[in-house]
Amino acid sequence: MSLKPALAPPAVGISRCLLGESVRYDGGHRHQPALVAALSQHFHLVAICPETEAGLGVPRPAVQLVQQSDEIRACGVADAELDVSTALVDCAVRHRAQLEGLHGFVFKARSPSCGVGSTPLHGEQGEVVGSTSGLFAARVQAWLPRLPLAEETQLVDAAACEDFIARVWAYYRGE
Ligand code: SF4
Image (cartoon, rainbow, N blue to C red):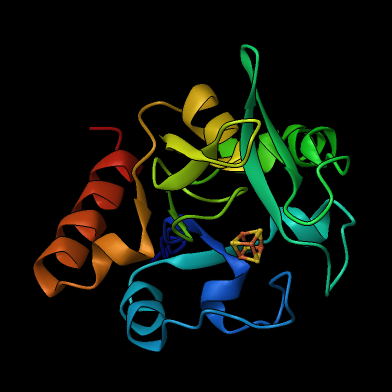
């Protein structure tokens, strides 16, 4: 009798601060224990923190997204001369092969790196002019337009969480 090797579970990326790791700019986290427990029942979770993996350190200056001509840059809140855009995009480029192996991603909402459409976009005078995706998440959206994505705020509701889990399984099966 031959035993079939067990299939690896789907791999789902997750913003590292949602796991309770103290990687935010202020040294804090945004642990979502119920969500992490639900996802862990189905998936292998792959933790990524673009800002720390870009070498920005903890704690670090807070950054925000700023529309500059036809470009969106991640600039310091207190020091507008600080620009970490290149570090964040380079971090995404380094992770590209790993990202292409994922079957879904749960991002931290409103982050200048991780938000998916919810991150405030500022004008050059600091005023909010709209909302967009963080620089790392935007690369993921551009490279992998079919990859199931969600922000943690969209998965509070049990039905929404189940729907995301189903979307990941469908992507994993190639549907
Ligand atoms: S939102 Fe993203 S970049 Fe910010 S601390 Fe969490 S994982 Fe890191």
